[in-house]
Amino acid sequence: MGWESRLTAASADIDLIDILWRQDIDLGAGREIFDYSHRLKEQDVDKELQDGAEQEDTWPGEGAEALAQNLLVDGETGESFPAQFPADISSITEAVPSEPPGLQNNLLSPLLTGTESPFDLEQQWQDLMSIMEMQAMEVNSSTSEILYNAPPGDPLSTNYSLAPNTPINQNVSLHQASLGGCSQDFSLFSPEVESLPVASGSTLLPLVPSNSTSLNSTFGSTNLAGLFFPPQLNGTANDTAGPELPDPLGGLLDEAMLDEISLMDLAIEEGFNPVQASQLEEEFDSDSGLSLDSSHSPSSLSSSEGSSSSSSSSSSSSSSSSSASSSASSSFSEEGAVGYSSDSETLDLEEAEGAVGYQPEYSKFCRMSYQDPSQLSCLPYLEHVGHNHTYNMAPSALDAADLPPPGALKKGSKEKQADFLDKQMSRDEHRARAMKIPFTNDKIINLPVEEFNELLSKYQLSEAQLSLIRDIRRRGKNKMAAQNCRKRKLDTILNLERDVEDLQRDKARLLREKVEFLRSLRQMKQKVQSLYQEVFGRLRDENGRPYSPSQYALQYAGDGSVLLIPRTLADQQARRQERKPKDRRK
DNA sequence: TACTCCTGTCATCGA
DNA sequence: GTTCGATGACAGGAG
Image (cartoon, rainbow, N blue to C red; front, top):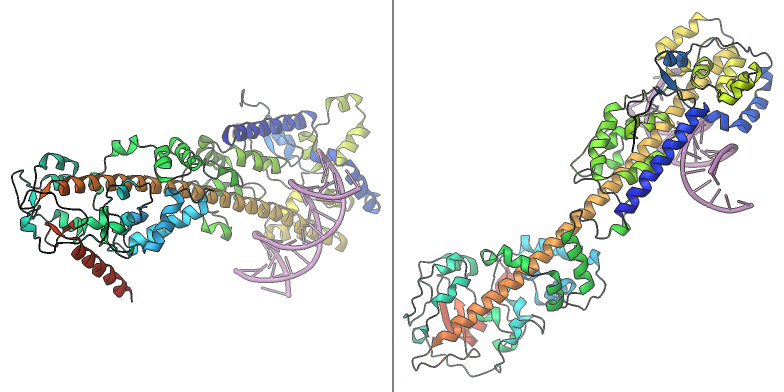
């Protein structure tokens, strides 16, 4: 559902509008012809005025002009258009340092655990925002506790099963540690690490030469054991947060490798709800990025990126629109009754919306206002239609523009034609005619003040006539103003809907990025863990025996070297480094 | 018949 | 003070 059906519905709307409109024109029927009862009522109201009304037309004929130019004039509003139509229309969460341990799970849980069954996008969004904040504010914090808090299924937490609190020989120095041949496996590291001159014959730590600062700069003085051992192995509680690991292994990420891991894998491994994962995976496969939460979209728009715009004409409420703005929306707001030329506007509309399937809005807008010829311009195949925003077409114009249906002409009585024309006129036109106003309502309404006053001065008009003329002018102006106001309002709504669409797109994109980051982080963890095991497993004491992971841990020193230290010492350092950021915050 | 949508109109406000 | 545009509110017609 969604796109195709909406497009189909929209095109159906437009087709229907087209058909109705053509019928309307073919029949020569203006809107008033369908408003006969209304006209009768008004005629009753104005009966006394009409008693003396003249029947002959003294009104200038705009419709006749249009006819002379091979144009048809819409009887509804005097819209001129060519007689021929076109032929066819056819977590980093975790990566984010220094998350308090309690928060870790909160951040991770939405994506990495199955505890939250509904895929609450709002929650995801908030999670993401908090992540971003954390990234910005707490770069220096530790990430190692992430590993401490790894879920039970996390391979990181299952690699060591040594009992905690194992006695530690603190007398063991790094110099006693020997390193078995492991250089070939360092290819797993980033180039920085690969460059480490670790000779297979080297027997002493530091594993990393002191002049190498790459690891130092990335890992800092890090207790690697804290990264890879679950808390119980560290012999400490969850507060044994290790020092910072500010995304040190970004270079380790392999794009191709990332692509190999699907979100379904993520779901399986991390307890990620498979349904949610599949949803996100669909998003990955979808260019539109709208599959997410699209059902909540008020208009299900699919305008191109940055199609949101603020109405240039007015709508302050739309000023909150996103920055990228097109002229499409403003064209809506300004076309129509105010008499703007809308050719370029329509082109803008096509450029901005047509190419990306703007049909829903399209049809909605057209459905609402198709009776207004000025708005027919929103139909691409009608953009050549001339726009005559004449208010209250003069009877003569109506003569030419809205010829009665052929059947009516065949009946041929002048009376019927007169009746027909009579019905075409608006209330004010009737009144003006009844009061023998010597100029058209069009002039009354659209002339500038000076010309209008000049016009009035040319004629000897009674007080009643002057009053009526002023009323006609006021009503006509207000009618157009109301039309413009409604268009603006609609335009504002459309802009807001577009903004919502854009924000939903952004949200979906950020969620995708979040999942990507989490995936990358997990892979980095796995890589670092395997490397740690590799290195640690090859270390030998002076007797050639391996070190116990429960008693010793690897730690990065401040100078970039890697040290083998007793685990208790490592835990103490970790606790100390954990307190520092807290103190800093105070 | 009730409801919604559209349109015209009036009243009012601010520029 | 007048004019004008914008807009909320209302009424009435149409579907």
